[in-house]
Image (cartoon, rainbow, N blue to C red):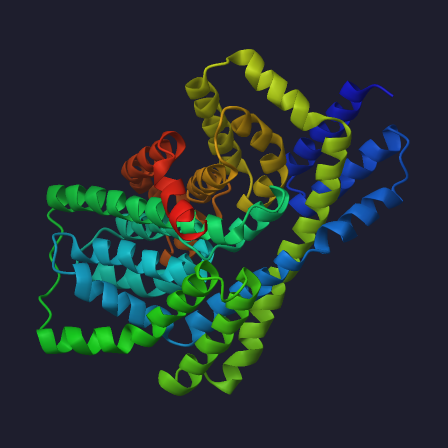
Amino acid sequence: MNPHIAIAILLVTFVVLIVLKCPITFSMIIATAFTLLYIDVPVMTMVQQMSKQLNSFSLLAIPFFILMGEIMAAGGISSRLLAFANVCVGQITGGLAHVNVLASMLFGGISGSAIADVSSLGALEIPMMEEAGYDKDFSIAVTVASSCQGLIIPPSHNMVLYSMVAGGVSVGSLFCAGYVPGILLGIALMVMCYLISKKRNYPKGKRIAFKEALRVTKDTFFAMLAMVIIIGGVSAGFFTATESAAVACIYCSLVGFFVYQELKLENIPVVLGNTVKTLAMVYALIAAAGAFGWVMAYLNVPTLATNMLLGISDNKVVVFLLINLILLVLGCVMDLAPLVLIMAPILLPVVTKFGMDPIQFGVMMMLNLGIGLCTPPVGTALFAGCAIGNRKIEKVSKAMLPLYLPMLVTLLLVTFVPALTMTLPNLIMK
């Protein structure tokens, strides 16, 4: 058995199947099976590794976070977060663009999902911005770009995936680490939105009377409390990530049913159906990636990748820039979850060799791949925004170009300034 041929079979088969538009889950399973046949390992090993990958307590948090996002969308929480964001920043030049970014920051801090952000808030924000005089392409672009915040501002179920494949890195620490970069990204996007709005003469929002602002803030209190339950519970040690997600699901259900009274019994089958559909795809992907990753480890792919990167340069800055470039390119052609499952075990030994903490790398990786969600040809957040706004992806991609700059600047800061990600975990979790 030649290990180099085995690695070639694994990777080439996977890439060819992806190019032929075979679903990623099946691409990984088929590539794994072919490789196992070549190296004369029983294919039943693949099934065992797939089962083993799903036998993890931390994965129980994922269905609860997905369910919570669906409940929020159906229960009126997202519309109230949008109204609160309008009270905070709606009066600035380009007010609705800032409202869009801040609402995504708040929504991401509860749902932890970029796609849920675009789907739930986009249906409200895009028509609102267009009616106020904003270009439709710009409105969709801001909605898509701001959704990246949901991947790094906790809770993010993708952080749970990263924690699992990174050898059990603390989910609570990862959650704490995402706050400062997430807020920084939001501020950077708002600065760019201000500059674009000033140049294109986009309008300011209407000044909201103090009494009305107070009413909106009071109405949003119960929605914001969900964030406190999740993050406060995990950080203070009252809950695990899984327990906090379950409690937050119950809380959001009670708020939707009895406080806002927008969640109805007839909505429940749709909410549960969407949750199960998403969960089935995520878990199938995790199982397939478990077998795929086991074969890579068996063939020493992480070690070979580390040696290859170190062979290019022993300069930390060069290696980190190269890793960012690799993740950015891969993020443009593959979805986020499989890349976390495949690339984290390969790249983590490299960055730790240069002194980067696994927690910092987790945030860096999420932001990197989040940019990929906004980038053609496989940007799912971009596709969702274009579908909701009924616009061609080519036009929206052009409108996205100025918004990539604040995202890339934030990415570089996260990569080279450890204090941005490590200060809060060191203060709160240790």
